[in-house]
Image (cartoon, rainbow, N blue to C red; front, side, top):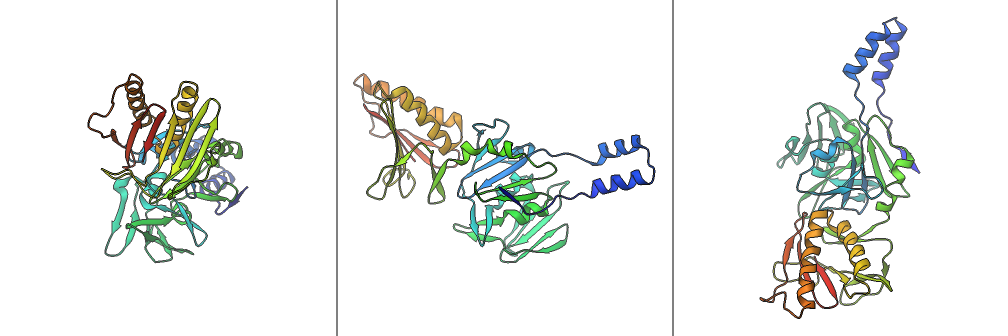
Length: 344
């Protein structure tokens, strides 16, 4: 399923074997191994057209703490990090925003430099190779050693620098593999994760994302296309005990205007409420990635629903409550007697 792009370095192993051949005591070899060889059991996965990055291991700490994070559904030791950008393929190479690519590969923000005049990106994390790439130049430098590449960094509107994941990861000492079936890029250092381990993420990979501007709307596999009108694409999950609808719009909510934005409707009539809200929470979690933020939305929706149920008016000023998602999007929550609608 995976195609190998690069083999990891084995210089340490060859050195160890040569020492055995000349009679160095095993006890000293063991001590040398403890001093010089470290094992990184983590890995990172980028998925084409997906705002999420899947990270196992210590590199999670390199990401902005304000980014939404949660455990993967069937792999709780893998962290799902929801970003505000989508990876894409160009000239058969996967591109990822420089900041998120660097973080995922173990480089902190403070060690990512951008030279606007030279249009050059430099990654200089202590203990790792210094990597440099320039927009429009088919070359990567790793500790000053140049390697020709088949693609170059690009800048995409509104001015975001995108780097080719393969070349940057390899320059930092990673092995990189492409899985055509899953449409993912896997990068790891010393130990390759097993196929069984990667398969645990298949439930996450089953989620599709529909691009809307620089963001995307999550569509779980149990939701089916259900037509649409006025620029909306509608996806529906409807059973006797549950009804949830995702309407993908053409833009995002503005401070005073939700027209044209995407929406998630969750039924709240008594015979459907429990399961509808359970599924709705799962959809919102896929969309925003932060359990606390999602629960805040639903707690406000439930509060307003009860006011409506008792004949009250939850919005005296006529304005539904607004929230700011971890990725910066404005989110409206509006409840009535049949359900709650989340605009984003």
